[in-house]
Length: 146
Length: 146
DNA sequence: TTTAGATCAAGAATAATTCTAAAAAAGGAT
DNA sequence: ATCCTTTTTTAGAATTATTCTTGATCTAAA
Image (cartoon, rainbow over all chains, first blue to last red):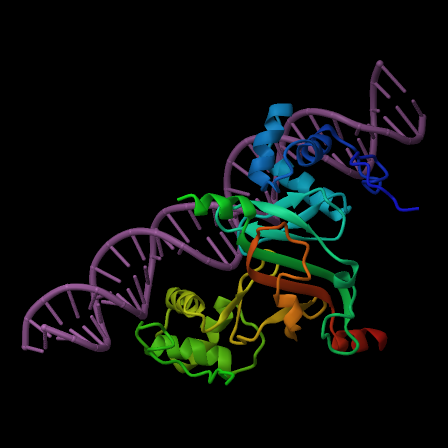
């Protein structure tokens, strides 16, 4: 049976770490609100709405913890600030150079295996990261109207 | 006829910009020496052997210029310092988590097209970036001997 | 040779992130 | 409940790669 992630945190899903209010808030920001791959600072801004006393350092801590226990993913585009996303399915990211938006792109299972890549024999593959750049349909449409 | 990059810089390949000693040195470091995807600081260290008076700021400038005219590629792995590589063929990068080495992986032509990716209709794809992480054959072999 | 623009160099500035140290919170045992 | 230990949070300092600034230098063309 395929496990469907419930997007709720528990002490178990945190690998025994404490399920603190701060960790919940940070996670909720990523899951509840627009899934727009916010940066740490953006998460911080949104988290303050739910918990005004939270600090940026804590947001960084929580994001790192959540990433390490595998509850969320850190998304790095070039050398920009890291973004975070709660989508745990294997997926790529498309970055629109017009609107700076990031959207998830479903990955085919074959892309996640070693087979299609010309890796040297004996390589142990742990992780594949696919990032695409271009113009999203919306920005494409808008630019034609000018 | 397929253009084979000659790995020599000219005023033309620089898009009219000047072919200065500094730009040549920086480019030579990437082409001549071990193709190990050095960072800007590493390029700086090696460039000083050829031109002791060169400054780090200039190395950054040259690397940016060379990247912008398409003579080299900037390689970003997570949020680590950018690395640079003179391989202009479409290729992915494999990062070995044991030795921190980066090697080029030949990309199949189909990976560079839009077709195999589930992009929303109307998306204009400009660039694909594939990065893999794991253990390289050498480190794999070494770890078995312990 | 003069001149305008390009490039370089050194150091200051920036920005994202990490580190540090002390305060607060959370469990567990008594 | 109270004490004790460990975890977590917080605020600010520190770090690091990179970019910016400014004046000096170089270059190509007039």
